[in-house]
Length: 455
Image (cartoon, rainbow, N blue to C red):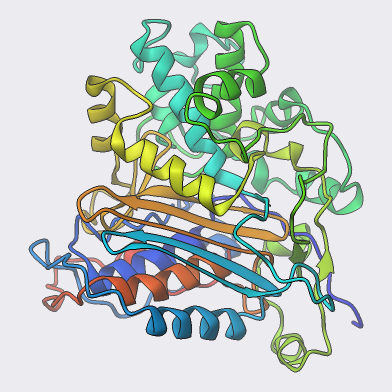
């Protein structure tokens, strides 16, 4: 094999990235805090790529400290650059805001073999962070009385399996049981063979709905882009406008996010300036694992195996679930708008921020996900991944900390999500370590304690 297979499958918010951050939170933050989101697949439907190996990990004490450490910029730079180098990313950007001010770092270049450095001004594909826009739109429609969280999806889409029992709330919180079209062989093969294909939302729904559901509505958790695509279609039906126009009117323009866009599905372009985005694996192979074989990892580390450029692969296969474009600065502003109540009225804001809850009820100290919103320790936000780009966004309203990291490689040669891995390390430099008691026999390690292994 002389060249890597590029272009990765993804559900755009990956279990690996969230496991990484939850592992960080477990070491540093309270158990409300090991709320770093790691969507578990149901046992009956999980593929090998969706089942990471369990590792020994301490259960987190809910009373542990979340105090900030003094900002050590030199240490942060060392951590950031070391992680980026080890992950073999061509480029990475970090934006941090704390009570001590703003701090940004960049590493590497826009394109392999080039000399132009990446910068804070670069536009990148944000993947599943787009879900927070779609979720915010739905919640605004709820507060306007246009629909209810308890409405059955059959009220808007009579073709959805179990639609009389699936609520809007369950779709927002990934508890509908609907099959994730991103996991289908059909989609992944098409993305490998026709990366420029323009997918319509109905194309995506048509893949998902005939396939078996994971569980009865409300009886489990499974991260599924199908939920968000259906929510986007519902928003269009209620508003009588394209989703991109709805997002611009309700989210981007009011908040002054001038460097952020929800592009037309026909477009595969990124606004200037932007880096190139790179991948080692192809989509079909990542159904099994996103980690290269050991010999290819060694070649990647030696620089004799390079990833391919998939910057211009059409992202329409994600639509409402991941089609957005932004910059690090705009993502920081968006994360802070979420936590500061600039998007919803006070009543709905409380519902939104209170919504993240354990994806595994038996592991209350584990992963948390709510109404299109994740919680990473004290940080509310989301992660995202599209071919060539991995992004983390989070804001802590208590300690006034906002962190954004992106990379132009995803995943790394060893299968990790680079931006999430870097964010994990940076969180370790920002928050005081928390003592944790050893697990008791009744405490299961759960998703928070899982090592990274596959997407």
